[in-house]
Image: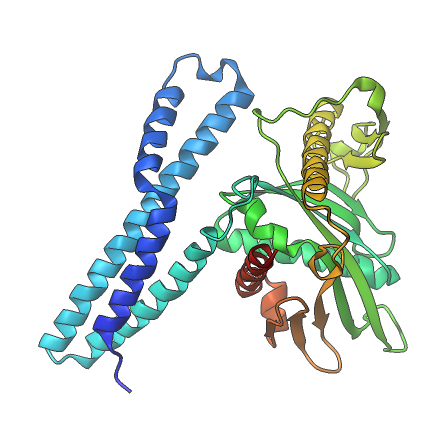
Length: 369
């Protein structure tokens, strides 16, 4: 059946108009002007943390405006391409228009997801922690597979990442790992990945070739900003220093530079070892600790307001996704029912469809609640 290009283009323009209305380009332009003035201040870098916040925000706003302008231009160009193909009766041009139509539709769908993210911290950068669970060496290997999956996903999108801490298991894989993802809406996007992940496969570590089920936990928290204020008295924390561990003979392993901070009232523990100095690791650990306490505070406030009674279906702590490699190959999200038979693609970072489905599922729960 021939594509009804006028109807399809009209639908694209309608979707784009809804996204543009939520994005509010005029407000973005005003914000861009304010940030540009601030960034051009001669004393900007007197406070490096503030300067970093300003330049990151400036880059984010510029990117958002460029993204909106690009989509508008692509839809206009598509309309011209269709007109050329129809007038010239050129099937090759119409085929090109069809491919571009599908590309724009998919890209707009991903951009539309942002309009569904209205949480207080959704726009923030994210701190992702992965911990191996039940399953022994297979679980540690699974934790490393998940870390690679998320880092590859970020790489595919051009998002900056920074590994903050890695704790290696004795035989293979990771006991735990923590890394930042620095991108607009990173927390809002990745927060739907939080929960318990399950892997079923023939264990490569079992010489009898038996099937093994293993688990790993994913935690996602928003990265704090300078405007956040979480007071942490020195009496509420215990700081331990130790020697960093990891493969290779890097200088990072030769001194007691790793830092572990325990927040005594909540028993929240944060370890950092990937920076070269104890001072840098302590600063990074405090940022992550403050981020976790910020999220904990928000959860407590939400529980007080809504008098939550522990609805299991909405709990991010429940098992939320299965990765089955044997006896068949399937990755299935147990909340959204979204699934994929391309397990190698998923582990290589092709998880946008899962994230998309998760955000829409969460939005549905919010509306229902």
